[in-house]
Amino acid sequence: MLTMKTVFDKAGIEDYDELIDFINFVFSNAHAPHDFLILLPKLYKREYFPKGSHYIAREDGKIKALVGAYPLALEILNEKNDIVSLPGRGIGAVSVHPYFRSRGYMKILMHTALEEMKRDGMVFSFLYGQRQRYEYFGYAPTGGAVSFNCTETNISHTLGRQWQTGLSLKKVQAEDTVLLDQIQMLHEAKNLRLHRSRDRIFDILSSWKAEIYSIVEAGGFAGYFIHKIDNWNNSSCISEIQLYDLSLLPEVLGLFFRCKKHLGQRDSVNVFAGLHERKKISVLSGFSESYVQIPVCRFSVFDYPRLTDVLLQSKAASEKIKEGAFILQINDSDSSAKIRLFSDNTGVGAHETDEKPTLTLNSLDAVRFLFCPLEASSNPVIRENAFLSDALPLPLYIENADGV
Image 1: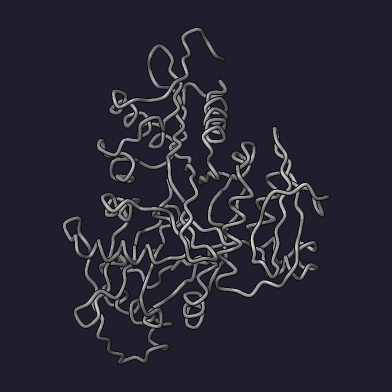
Image 2 (image 1 turned 180 degrees about the vertical axis):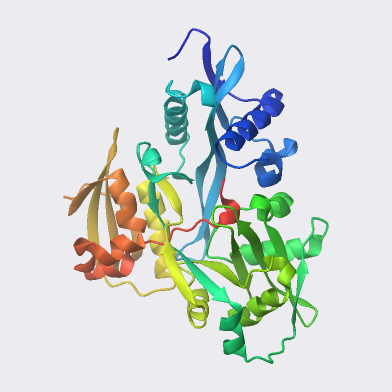
């Protein structure tokens, strides 16, 4: 129940110490011990503290609830080989003091954050969390990721028991500026990525208690990967791996297994790839023990024409899309939009239209329809339309290091 002493506003730098103490307390109370300065240095170092990104509820001057909405940008290579930057915000640190729950604080803060994202022209937002809890706010699980379980036995049979390699691994430290420059360059060679500031790259990649390794070949930089232990299921995880030559993947993982201290004595590791990373998937599927396909996270889309236009162009740059058109109407709680997705002799893309819709969906269903691999393989509207079968799902991927 709200009282006259309840105040809703945004946290400033003067609230920094109290805010860190608050989220550490709430998450430690609900889960395992948390220290956000260690878990997410890219956000919670004092010098990085994002102004105006924390919506808070106070009682008697003390923070009792909080929602973080952190600025970010999705960078996509379009049909003209130009990088298009789409602004968004990641939702994180959603927390309510255990003694002040059931007062509606989270709903008020989430709705305020959503209203401001729309007002400020954000194209999308994403978060992690329990599905139904966040569907109430317009977030749906979508995007395509594949987790490959790879074992030492897989490697020994793939390369032979006496295999040799000219590769070596080096753990990257904050002072390794040349290596971090090379990692940044390789990240920026991706066709689909979240923007990463060079001055924060070490803190971004080492968030979630991850370790960064460079791959060295003949004394030169060949790639990098990020390894961590997933605390939810205590599994070993390579959440991101990039190589100039992806055929070296078995050797890289073999080196990783030989260095048992990196694995904490585990004999398997889960390696992640985006569904759009066809070459990486092809190599990993050739020797891994098993794989599972999972949604990337929960997405909410505020500007469907901009996002679908760029992603459709990005997909067409690497895959053939049959000619055709499809009119989709998307109804939100306070708005409605009609989008024409097309592929013809003028190019591919999407734009707003006044044409009669072929299909009408609410926003939650539209997110799944456009970006979810399971929807693309099971929905008869997509399967029975040659153009949509090629066009969908649109590639949407957020790497773990960029999560909030």
